[in-house]
Length: 222
Image 1: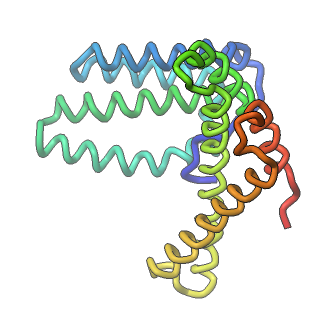
Image 2: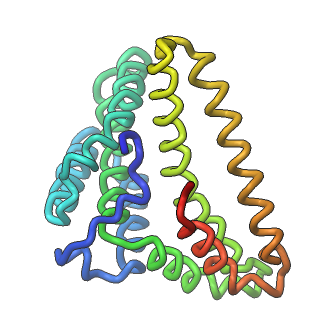
């Protein structure tokens, strides 16, 4: 599914597949801090090179994953063109390289880590924050819903595009955007109603939220 990076877990036996989800998230944090501390185009190029090596070693350079990067390429081109015009080539290389490197590392995490493992890792990491009245189960539920919503929205967009093309309206923004918005909003309402019907919105039911959401997603589609 083009345009989607999240939710593309690919089973495998590489070193990154065997690494715990918490360690992968920690690596992303370290990469982000390094990006913020280091400056200049050289560090950005090194980050991109390392990210490509990590993604390739994890078996992430497959056609399906690369198709998901096409939309990002357009954003990077526009961002790079703006920075070249506003700040010059060095700043453009730095900004585009930092963004591309982090996205590639995040993609390596998503293709090697099942969603449930990522959610469990987030829950464990946030448990010390209970003292600040932050419920880790609620945060994990929101993260899980986000991961599932992005591929679903992309699928709806693809179906809407194909329907518009079948009617000869593939160049009409109205024929593509209006049904997309209506279907996405309808899906969001159905999700909220399903969660409410299961009592997932009650505080005492928070530990069971992810299992309720998982059972809804595993229903066969009509």
